[in-house]
Image 1: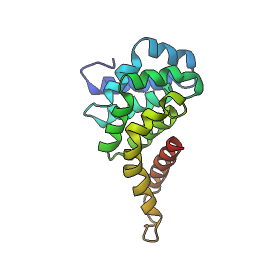
Image 2: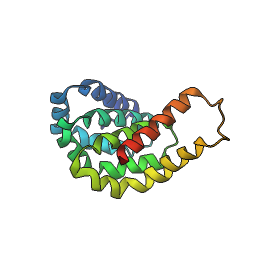
Image 3: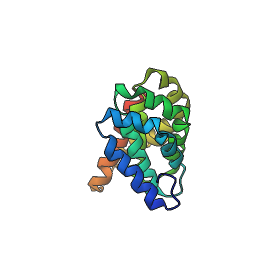
Image 4: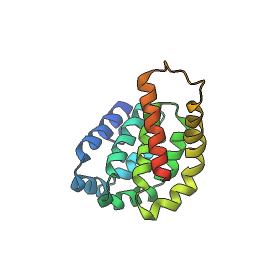
Length: 165
């Protein structure tokens, strides 16, 4: 279903995998063994944002936790870090940016991925998340900004700084 011709089917399949693997390390391992991580990484370059959203959500869950370092390495081996960085660079969707930075933060807990993340993601995290968000702390910041937007952008900044930490 992740390779289906209809984006809605791909998105639903990724969302279902996100749901299945939440908190279940056995399911996470099985998805890796069945090639699901590679297919989800491929969806990061899809043309539709709904597919990005679902693929990132599934990947975030798949690489959450120290017990899932094999999934983190697999994601890296299939070009997942550069794909996440490309998506972060090109999307303006704050929810997708939150998901991408969440995946990167989860990946950063794996010692073997610290240097690849620094090499591939540091400049983009700094230039497209840290610096723009730090400028919103000045006195000209509009206090009447949309609360949901502010919550998402705060989470993006939290994820990015967590990754860099």
